[in-house]
Image (cartoon, rainbow, N blue to C red; front, side, top):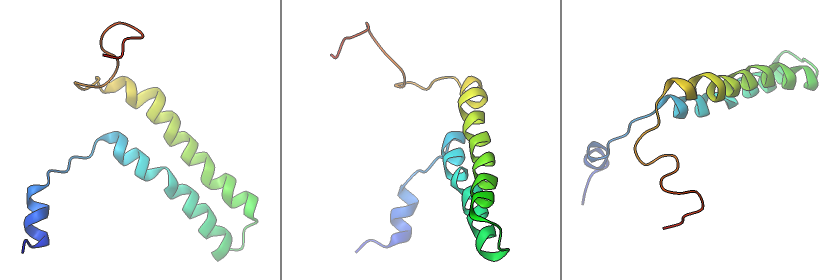
Length: 85
């Protein structure tokens, strides 16, 4: 029987900036919804207050972060347009 630690040792996990960005996008929404429940803010205020930072993170990822990282091998298109081989 293989222990969980041995299995985890063999797995190589590397997180990119995009992975961290995807993990961070729902956090402001959760904080906004929690604020509506804890503080008693109206729901639209909490949702909009959480959505604005989430949108900012998505715009950052699309507009700025994607320009900084060069494409990795195997990503993007290869060959002629329309070829599936």
